[in-house]
Amino acid sequence: MDNKMIKESMELIDAHFKNEGISRRDALKLFGVGGAAALMTAGATTEVRASSVSGKVVIVGGGLAGVATAARLKRSADNVEITVIEPNETSVSYQPGQTLVGGGVWENADTEYQTADFMPDGVTWVKDKAVEFDPQNNSVKTASGEIIGYDYLVVAAGVKLDYARLEGLGITETITSRGDDSAVRKVIGQNGITSIYFANGASDTWKEMQKFVADAKSGKRVTGIFTDPDTPIKCGGAPKKIMYLTDARLREAGDDARANAELVFYPNGGKMFGVPEYHDAIKAQFEARDMKWHYSHNLIKVDPVKKIATFDNFMQVQGAWDEDLEEYAMETKHNYVDVPFDFLHITPPMVAAEEIGSSPIGSPKGWVPVDKETLQHVKYKNVFALGDIAGIPMGKTGGSARKQYKVVVDNIITMMEGGDINANPKYGGYTVCPLITGLGSVMLAEFDWSGKPTPSFPLDPTQERWIWWLLKVYALKPMTQYGMLSGRA
Ligand SMILES: Cc1cc2nc3c(=O)[nH]c(=O)nc-3n(C[C@H](O)[C@H](O)[C@H](O)COP(=O)(O)OP(=O)(O)OC[C@H]3O[C@@H](n4cnc5c(N)ncnc54)[C@H](O)[C@@H]3O)c2cc1C
Image 1 (cartoon, helix red, strand yellow):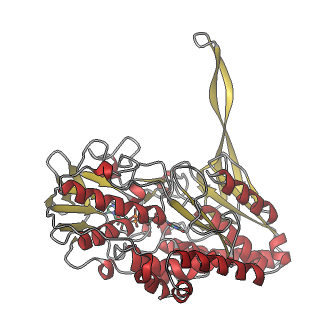
Image 2 (spheres, helix red, strand yellow):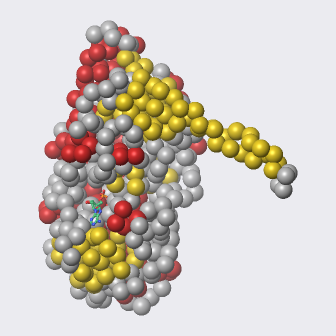
Image 3 (cartoon, helix red, strand yellow):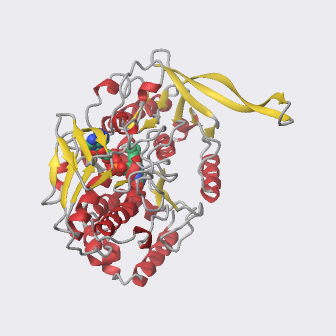
């Protein structure tokens, strides 16, 4: 990005903030660590409702969405008794930073913070796991056997990473992004097999990426492959972000290093992005960087010794003639493809925690089924779900959760007051993917239920910009910590 573009971007952003009633000084502070906190208190916060209602709310999961909900509820209705059930001391971690760790921009420690530091005052934290749900009797049971009753239940338990579904890795358990990863780390994070989806996996990715780049630089012909599974995933952009960063690190090592490396994306899906404008932009970016892709490839097996990844390459073909319908049936044909690799980045299949997915509040697919606009459970009206575990057809991102937690808090208070939640603002499907496309460039892909780009700034959202890189690297973490986790923004 040249100086003219930077100036142009800054001027436009400046104008946007001015429009919002935020001073130039505060707008510029957005791009400095700590400055975002000032911005949050300078005007970008949302109005918090004040209510004297009382009741008991239990929140399962003390990650991003759970703590933000607890904080806003506490600010809005001080008399409400809030309990958060969360087993991990370091659960409220900043997962978007894991991509930067994998690309060698941040250290692992930059993404880690203690749950206790962000648990709002006056909230009871039960350091345990919720293992049984009894929505008929409004109670939850923890692993240690404690039964906790509620008036309202909020489920914000995120997703689990299911590397165990991949044959050949010898993994039998699901893990969360932070916490005990010993079962997975025995095989992922070495021998060129990587994954940024868990915290230690991200730092190991950077170690393995450096070896890969060094091999390419030394003249060896190498292949890096990047997968994207057949389940919904958190941060749909991350499988590509880490590929862009690998490309950038190879280019940084020199033209020869890049020329010696083949980089190939193998997604299960049939396009680069659900929104056509972003799909087209990403395709063009891939072509410009000589990054290849093959759609409809689902990773099913890895041989970590021979370094071969096996994909199910599936396609719809014409089957037998159906006499009743008087048409040919369509059948799925599977072709199993072995791909040798030097560097493999795995985006694992993702599932809801088994204890929730198969409970009365779960669903056959595991996610907690809620109305996509009110986030109220389809069957139990005093149960809500948000964040990655919510069974709604839109982005599992922190950006989505940032909009959702305000809707959930508002709806719970309205129900406690005896009002109608349908009169409240709804979740409009907003989600955001700051798609890192290089060291110093990001395309800020924002969209909602409309399936169209919904940029927050008056800039072409399909362009890669340095200004969004600054936002991603410097501003989003303090914005998350001081805005969202405090329930203010
Ligand atoms: C590599 C990567 C890059 C990402 N990049 C971005 C990005 O650029 N922008 C963006 O907006 N988002 C991004 N995300 C996604 C974002 O981090 C998640 O969408 C967000 O953390 C979801 O919040 P959550 O509260 O639903 O889940 P989490 O923050 O994962 O928290 C869930 C919590 O529930 C707890 N839990 C699980 N089961 C139970 C149980 N039975 N009982 C009690 N507690 C339980 C877990 O311990 C965990 O602490 C990224 C994620 C990853 C992994």
